[in-house]
Structure formats: structure tokens, C-alpha cells
Length: 461
Image (cartoon, rainbow, N blue to C red):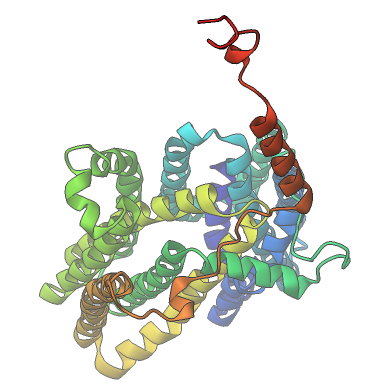
């Protein structure tokens, strides 16, 4: 958790320091861009790196690099030698190694946590992430107000504590072996290995659906935040901060409720009745979609900060529930040696939606205004939810109809309907010869019960 708090705090501290150095909003934007750009550039290669190395070694190396980057900014601030290029470079390094660290953390959970404790561990990890999002931003601003070097001192200590914790963690010591290339053909290329990761993701229908839904919902919530901020000119900074913190509070609640909800959906009395809808994880995805559609309706009803806060709270709660299901599925079902690559492709898509949300939200508000923008988001999300609700049952009916048609008696089935031929048992000539010899011996041999007995003619009877 200390590493996550440090990253979220620096997300506020770097832009504030850039503003204090240059008094230019443009440089503030460049500082935020340098911190978030690695999420688009390095998720895919970082996934391959984590699959090649041990998770604990990767986490220790990234924490050491982040510690050095933050300490360099701290020393520059103390001695008055900090410059904007130095600040941008440190922010870029922080964002890059945070991407690698987050992927290695997922790989370490698989190797170090028993399967029985997986749900509880994921709930703790998800809760700590949302707590960090909710508390780190105001804490970072408060510490920067105490002194420009104060937040960097705190982050140096946080990264040092995280490094010590990683070095003492059990598990994660097994090196993963990539088997993308065929035997005897040498080492697989980068493209082949990444293609194998994408193919692994595509082989799981649940992960494909979850990635599509998460991309859409991330786009919606971040566009809603931009719409709210664009219309918050008359609101105080405290109101804006409380509204933005509502999503983190909802995420904390959703993470805490996830294990109990998972047990409830698997209850013997409830599970048979929900079986026609699909597994519990697919039910949670379906509920996530409709909860977000309802949440986007709330700011349409009222434009005050309370309505926006309620919408973000529901979105955070539903998002945490689906994140728990996705992370548990990835750790439990993805093939060994491909987990980090699958997670990297998933996060690249979802974080790409976050990057697009800011310009799209700003363009939407400038084109139609805040009330019409909130209505547009609700209509788009409702249309997606209705389309999915209509397509999924239709697909199941078509699939069941195809299965039933293949079993109709008297129907002439094509060779491809029969599937691949089943090979019969291999019978060799030597086996036939042995069976023939054994059969002849049984025919010529007299029964043991008749040996030594005389017939009635021999006894004179």
C-alpha cells in the first residue's frame, strides 16, 4: 500500500512543483503528461519483462529506482537546483517503474498466495488501492503546502519501506519459462511472445467481455469527472475534492463487500436459480453495466455536487466488484508464464480510455454544455446496456438451437459436424499372433477335472 500511496501523492506533487517553478499551466500539464505517458508506452513490454523474470526481483528493482528518482528531486529542492527538465525526467521514471511494479505485484500474488486465500488477498489489495486514491491527493496537497520538500521526504521514506517489505516477502522466487517458440527453433521473438499473450487473452471469453466493459466504463467515469469539473466554477475547492473522493469511497465499500457477495452468489439455495444467467463472475459484469447506467442517470436528475458525488460513489462500488472478479479470474485461469502479458494488454486498453476521456469530455462540454453532456453520457451507456441485454440471450438461443439441430435423428450430418475422427486402438501383428497361439492351446488342452478319471467302459460297468 505504501507504494500506491507514494504514486498517487506524486501525481499531485509533481504538477504543483512545476507550477511553483514556472507559474505556467502548460508546464503543469506537461508534468502530469510525463507521469501518465508510460502507461501507454510500457505496459506491453513490461508484461513481457515480468513474465521473463521473478516477480520479487522486479519489484525490488523498481522500488529502488523510484527511491533514487524521488530522492534526487528532494536533494535538488533542498539545495535549490531543481529544474523543469529534471522534474519531468523524474516524473517519467516514476510512471515507468510504477507500471512494471503493478504488473509484478499481480504475478507475485499468484506465486505467494494460496488459492484458498486468494479472494481475501485481492479484496485487501483492491481496498488499499481505493484508499490510496481517496486519501493521497489531499494529503499530497497538504504536505506540499507545508513545504516543497516535505512530500518528497515522505515519498522517499514510503519507497524505502516498500523496498524492505518486498525483500522480506515469501514466494515469487520461481523463474517463469516462456514456451512460445516451437522446440528446436530457438528463442521466440518479441512479436511472437506478445502474440501468445494476446492469444491467451482472446481464448477466455470472460476476459474479452470484461476488457470491453472496463474500457467503456473507464471512459464514462472520467468523462463525467471532466464534465463536473468544467461546470464547477461556482463551487468551492472543498466541494470539488469531496465529490472526486466519492469514487474512492465507493471503491472501498465495493472491495469490502466483494467476498461476502461472492459467497452469496454461490449459496446452494441461490446458485441453481441464477445458473441460467451464467457464472457469478458474469452476473457481476452484467450488474456492473446496469449500475453504471443508473448512476449516470443521477446527475441528469439534478446538477448539484451531491448528485455527481452519488453517481461517482455508485460507479466506484460497482467498479471494485468487477475488478475483483477480473483479477481473480486472471490469477486463477491464465496460463503460467503469460499472466503479466495478459494483464498488460488489458490495462493498456483500459488506461487508453482514461487518456482519451479528458479531451473527449472537454470537447463534449464545449459543444453542448454541462446538462446536455450528462444526458449524452447516460444515453450512450443505456444504449450499450440495452444492446448487451438483447444480444446475450439471442446468442444463447442460437447456440442452443445449433446444438439441438446437430442432435436431430435422421439428419444427414456433414463431416465437419461429426468433428475429428477418433483413432481406434492400434493392433499390431505380434499381438494377433500371440492371441492365436493362446486360443489354440486352450482348444487342445484337456480340462483338468477329467485327468486321471476312468470312463464307465474301463471300469467294467
